[in-house]
Length: 121
Image (cartoon, rainbow, N blue to C red; front, side, top):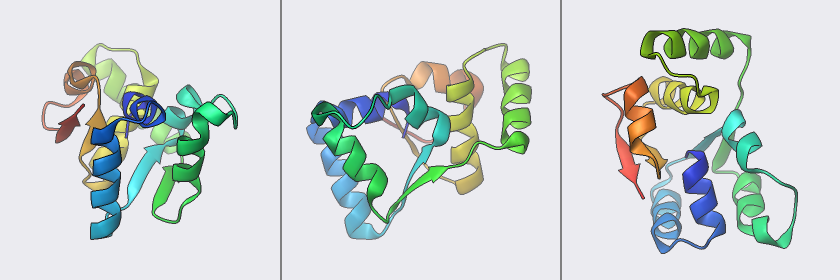
């Protein structure tokens, strides 16, 4: 999930809710790259209760952004001529795990990887 998907969750998007319900029913894990969570997280305010619940459940993994991933993100940004580290983290996470990406901004992600499978909100 990218930042737009998490913001849509906070805003009670029926599309995101349905996607999460289907993922849970099918045993499909939800992955959130750590930089995405950092971009969206503002504390445990009531507004972020749904996000806080999503992060706590067993089926959700916050994917670590370590030195190796940071270097790969930098290389991806250099190759694409873009500069958004968070988008690069989303692309790399999807590549490593073979995931589809839930996004509200497909254009930015497709500049990094035209082969990404996207679920556009």
